[in-house]
Length: 251
Image: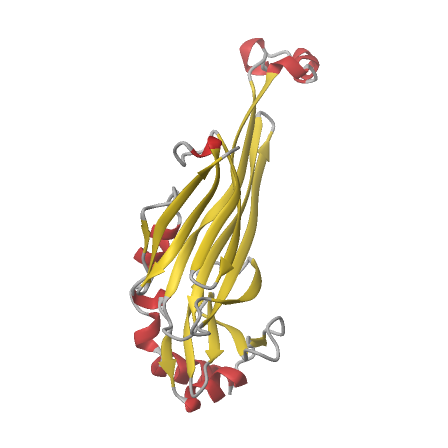
């Protein structure tokens, strides 16, 4: 019965889920505080769905009610084909859209007011940690991605990804040189034979009516240009776009 429900929902919401791989690839790119932040097209936009679809979503085994926003917003997270979706209740209907391709993430949600017309938005924070290690090196990578969903319009905005990436590797003697594993073990215990480097981009997001502000920015060897001396970047709404309004230097 659950399998039958999944097939029915996929059929009803097919237009919402199609052509999504190329959009996800764009989100992995560096976020360098562009002049303009536009809403995502395609499946990352949220589309109105019928009451019948909502009932089927509620019946899925993977459906999880989001309690963070109660009682102001009714919202569900659900999974189809290893893709994560959100269904969000508006005043008179529901919208639903693709949230992520990666199911092994943790999510958090924050309700915000977007403008003086009381349009509501939801900031979705998704976090992940990756790591790999071996005898001669490895890396640790943690990231947090921010998206803003306008409940009124169903538009979704990518607000960037903060990250910390640390690499370490061994540059000393190895047993492959002459075959002495004992000497290799001695050399690997020496701190000077290990090298590290790191890249860090950190910031906080504050949303107030009419404005989105990136603050407490830290850019250490990252690709976001000239941000090591910037305290905050402010965006204002112009119709359905976010336009960079102020770049505030460090005092």
